[in-house]
Image (cartoon, rainbow, N blue to C red):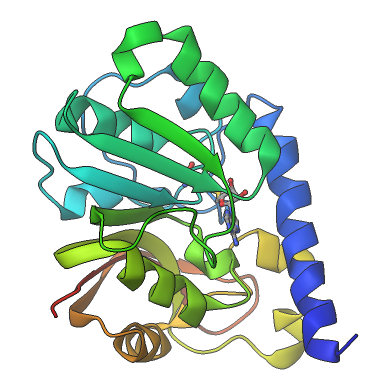
Length: 246
Ligand SMILES: C[S@@+](CC[C@H](N)C(=O)[O-])C[C@H]1O[C@@H](n2cnc3c(N)ncnc32)[C@H](O)[C@@H]1O
C-alpha cells in the first residue's frame, strides 16, 4: 500500500470514528469547536437534527431556493440543512443528503420517518462525496456545511459537484479556510483533521481547485475568524459560492 493511500485511509477512518460517535450522542458541536455562525433559514427544524449539527456556517444563506428546486447536501450529518431546504422547495422539490457515516444516515432517516409526510421530499443516501450517488446534470444546488475540509481528495469532490449540477447550477457551501497552510506535522494530526482544521485549504487553493473542476464566478467570504492554538495565523469560517456554466 502506498504512503498516500495509507494516509487517505487513516483520514477516512478518523472522520468516520468521530462522526459515528457524534451521531449516537446528543451534543451539537461546531466542527472546529469555534464559532458556528449558524443562521436559521427555513423555519422550525427537527430537534433530532439540530442536536447533532456540526456545521460552521449557513450555506442556505447564500442562495434563494424556490419551490421545485433540487438540492444535494455533501456530508449531510443529522440532516439540519436538508430539513431546512425541504420546507422551502416543497413537495415538487427534492433534497438529497449524502454522508459516508452510516450512523449519521440512519439517524437522519429515522428523523425524517418520525415526522411522516412532512419530509416526503427528503432522501438520505450513504456514500462518499468524492463519488456522489447522484445522477449527472440533475441538481440545481449543491450545498455543504463544514465537510469538504474533511475530504482527502477535494478536487474529486469539486468535479463530482460539477458533474451532478445542471447548467447554471450553483455550488454554495460553508467551510473552513486558512490564511496560511498548516505546517506538515500538524497536517498529519488525525484529531485536528477530523476536527475540520488540518485538512482545510487556503482561499487561493480552494479557488484554484474549483476552477480546475470547471466552476466559474467563484467567491469566498469570511464570516468569522478564529486563531488556531499557538499558531500565528487564523482560520476562517467561510461562505463559498461558484456556478457551473457550460
Ligand atoms: C462536521 S460534520 C457536518 C455535518 C452537517 N453538514 C452539519 O452541518 O451538521 C461532517 C459530516 O461529513 C461527513 N463526511 C466527512 N467526510 C465525508 C466524505 N468524504 N464523504 C461523505 N461524507 C463525509 C461526516 O460523516 C459528517 O457527518
